[in-house]
Amino acid sequence: MQRNVIRLIRVHQWAKNLLLFAALLFAQRLSDQDSLYLTILGFIAFSCAASATYVVNDIVDITRDRLHPVKKYRPLAAGVISTRQAWIIAGVLFVVSVGTALLVSPQFFAILMVYLILTTSYTKVLKHIELVDILIVSLGFVIRAVAGGVAIGVTISNWLFITTFFLALFLVIGKRRHEFLLLGDSASGTRKSLQNYTPQLLDTLLTIVSTASLLSYVLYTQAPDVVNRLGTSALVYTVPLVVYGLFRYLLLVYTDNKGEDPTRTLLTDKQIILTALLWGLSIIVIIYT
Image: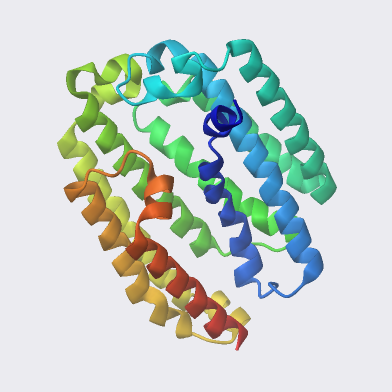
């Protein structure tokens, strides 16, 4: 039962909420205990909120998931957890999320509510509208980054906002491409928005957003306000690591067909993990020394 609950609430997807720590890192507050504490609380709040929405989404999509070659093995679709149990789990997660968010600040709570409204709208309606579906999921990542800033009382750079958005689009489009190729003619049976996508369109969008992601990150490293605040323009030296990370992920999407679960791919591919660690270490050295 415990293992099935962990699968149901998608614990591995909590890695997405590490975006909340971006503001802490780039605001040079890693050593500030109060800021770190608030960010950790924010991480817990968003992780529980995300898990609650995953559970609700699985409840809503239980019939469609049973038609999906992979999703049919999810706890709800497979029948190992009942709908009643799932609602209870979602309710507990929601209460913990809201309670933790209120410990951070009223402003952070408001951001969390925006996130929950957005994800609920996505589950009910927006996931079935082509293009809107990928934009909404990407906005969820942006909200996480903004929430990290709100938690510690700082405003994130506009370029960091844009970079986060394009990187999220990059991951989401790769996922849609995998779903389309996996399901073929039956794609619309599990996700209505897929019926108006084509491999050519998704490949074109993937090219556009990968380019935009890289350019926006480069511009972020050299933005005057960022350089003035950090006192250095050396962030540009982390660009090769970002380039390699993007190229590696594209390689996995196109040759190993690993775009289905971006989070799992990022957490299991050794080269991407090493690249991320080197990038993080480089950022810390550049900003904090």
